[in-house]
Image (cartoon, rainbow, N blue to C red; front, top):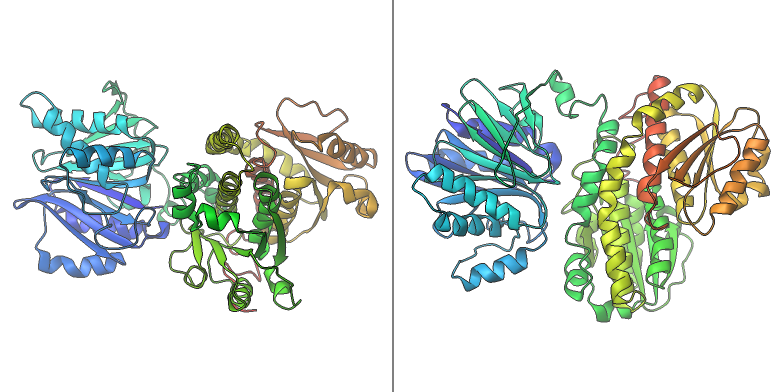
Length: 615
């Protein structure tokens, strides 16, 4: 989750850009840089590491000017390094760009530009944008540099595939800079004789509270005190400025009352950024994103998953998905139990670890035990350079940025996204998913972020139901197959933030004991999606209704439920093994709203820590 800032006005932009970058540090990054247009023309300074390191280098550089862009980078394509840091420049050094997201077709564009004589200096996908704008600028007709610059950016972004937010400056146009977005956030700020651009409002909130939130497919042209918006066809779009009323504490939360709520709403974007670049079903993608070539994938005889807490539930969903899509036997252990039970691992077993922080003591201990015995390990992790990533053979990073709330939400769904992408890749590598089937599944999974956006719209309706059940003392969660782990996750979330008793069971287990605790008015959450087990799950819910339970269904839209459910929340129809990315969202909202109604501390629940670094 990289950070973008931009400024144009009468002040020296360097302090403004640095301040903005510091306010975006919560998004996570490995390097930072600035591009500034001043009396010496366009100049760029970059630094691997923290913004403070970049700031320390500025006095000696002498860089200053009234227009510039800045960036904090979280590595996706290319290792963390000064060369791969943003901003990236054109061959002539007169155009600079910063970029968030992933350009899916960058290789095709890069090959064409290389053939045309362009010289690349980095390993990133982002650099193609600078060269593409350079090419379009040279081809644009007319003598008006500003108009040619706009047209160059417009034509360049129309050629890009994937998700992006960009900001571009041009030495020939020292009075303006341009931003554009598709599936990656970008917001402009309008001040008194100055204008700003950023990934998030906190970057410029100390200067202005007038914000213009760009929509997908929009291009912003920023000059001193003015913001103009256009669509991808170059047609003007009405500018709607919002007055931000958040205080500074709220600003870091994006205007939400709590980080947990913000992070639930962040999930469509974090899942999209995690999936980008990972669903091209070929050997290069499998090796580049997961470290395994086809030969190594075919040599895997078994996968053993180790994780703790919420990450364990993500791993449990992965077990179902890997066995279904890749036809590889998969086992899973709570990491704290794994190393003490003398596990028997067969040759050819891949150890798959899942951890948001990469510092979870039990998970690290399990991985170390396996690697000491000669087994290869693959880590799914969110934190660049964490201990788990350093001590694993392969790493797949989720791209959801820092998660502040102790109760994990967006890190969980990003883990699910990465694990589902891995399952599809393994299925393709091992011949379990023929070409057309694999491509169709990959395309469906890539659509999930849009369906997640639809699902988060249930928030207000869920809050109303939460008011009716928030004083209950016990809750039951039921699910089957790949949604049984989501029932577990729903119960865990509720326990973490509202401190009430909650249990979860596989639906088929209800008659084997749990049905005894159901009494009049007890809230029962049942996940009943379009799946082979739907009728069985529906029967479980009707049995709970018959015993007086207040049953709340999380169901596929359009499927009749019958019976007397107290409430029903529908999610879009998708492949059963992808549905956990949708069904978990209502349960997260319920946990949040019930905790708020009970007056609990949301982001820092009692007795809990974000990263459990001791056994």
